Amino acid sequence: MSGDETRPSAAPVPDEAEEGVLFETPDIYGAYPRLSDDQVARLAERGQRRAVDAGDVLIREGERCETFYVVLSGSVAIVEGYGTPGERLLRVHGPGRFIGELGLLNGQVAFYTATVRDAGEVLALSMDQLRDLVTRDSILGDVVLRACLGRRALLVGQGAGFRIVGSRYSPDTRRLREFAARNRLPYRWIDLETDEEAEALLRRFGVGPEQTPLVIWRDTTLLRNPSNAELARLIGLTPLPSGNGRGDLLIVGSGPAGLAAAVNAASEGLGTTVVEALATGGQAGMSSRIENLLGFPSGISGAELTERGVLQAGKFGARISVPAEAARLEPRDGHYAVGFTDGSEITARTVVLATGARYRRLHVPGVERLEGTSVHYSATVYEAQQCRADPVAVVGGGNSAGQAVLFLARYAPQVYLLVRGPSLEANMSRYLIDQVERHPRVRVLLHTEVTEAFGDTSLEAVDVVDNRTGEHRRLEVRALFVFTGAEPHTQWLSGTLALDARGFVLTGAEAQAGSAPERWRGQGRECLTLETSLPGVFAAGDVRSGSVKRVASAVGEGSMSIHFVHRYLDQTAAPGGTDSSPYTRPKESAWLA
Image (cartoon, rainbow, N blue to C red):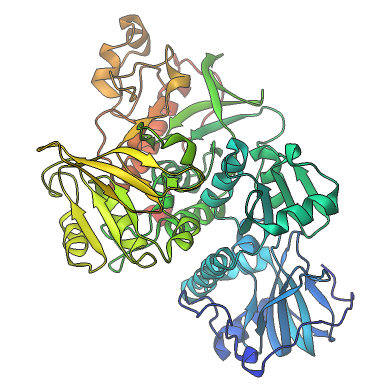
């Protein structure tokens, strides 16, 4: 983006904005650090100094930004809706601050406009220059990454970004909101039934209610009931690669197992593509806090862990495409072809299945009509912000339920944890139990099950029963969060791979026993530990039968799967193997040592 476009900013700026103070929200994420003189000097060795005048536009909302700016003198305003009647000042950066948030790092378009308020000088670096520097300076890299993650969280909390206009009863509205929330995209939902702004927007764009949901951005871009893929393209998420090249490895799923596999494979030189049906991070990406993962003594949010993994995989050259829902898997000429619901296809020598599992839905009267409005299967900041004044209930007795309870208790005045069993010890980690039981806003109800949900447009109450006595009671809650176990996403693999009775993918000796004996005689070996009933197809993480459903375990399995990928490629590339394509085992990265 050139800096020669001018326009005076209409919004008044309080003096304290010079220091990077966010008016609406305190800087609780470390989102606005001031770079040290030494850090600025290091950046200046690579970057270019540029004089700027008041009104110059450095970054424009809706356009991809490929430049990293540091303010040396003067000030830069961060504005949402620049040039529109709804223009809103978000932040002003003074000397020592840098411009950018998560979209800058992962190639998305900008959700704001950065315009010069006071003339001065900026330092401009290309993204390649920035990436090269931060890989050499881990301290600077961590400062930039943490700030970008924090700024994205603040944008989400402010309701910046695009708008979704739709009915709370519409499945497509729920679909778009879920896609945006799971991908941590800043947006604001305008309810067709209750928000007066909805009617004004429909009149303005000449659209009838039957054409909703709408996605509106910058008052210039209108999408009528877009698919997830169309919304992804608008924001700049990476599409599936064009054509159908034959890569070394295709990873299906981008939770902790998939991302760990991608980091290890790409860092070792394998041509690696990752595809994801909905959003990177899987169930872990929705976790408010993960406290039992090695290396994070104070815990880490699922969103931050996910984004760090995505950026790390991208640094080594892995390509991650969202959304891309796999629909079939078939052997073809010594490779494997994976077809997708949009009709596209990718072929690779090997495949790692890391599709994880999805939370089971709660099937009781009244729940289905309230899903997406006040009955939820995740607890993110979007849902939590709707619970500031009312009590809520969480169903489940595992770690995910415990993490959700503690997160929601930061917002809601009362959180009920409804547990079917006699105690929390059976499925919840001790550190979580201690926090849940001590929290003054949390009330644990054991031997308790939901039997019915009440409310026409939003949840008003739930009926619960004591499964020992049969006694019913009514809880006045305004939101229900459900974490009652998970089911594998393997319907598309049925008939192709050996699955256990619950649909999880069999691996190792169990997979070999469930497949044709001649398949392994032809390989001249036994089935590898994480290998499925198809040689060269591996499974890692929650989707694998018998796996430990923990983030650390998924990361370990994803990493270990690449060891077996190499063993398979070594075997098939050898004389007498099944693959005539050349394969040279790359040297292991020193980063992995």
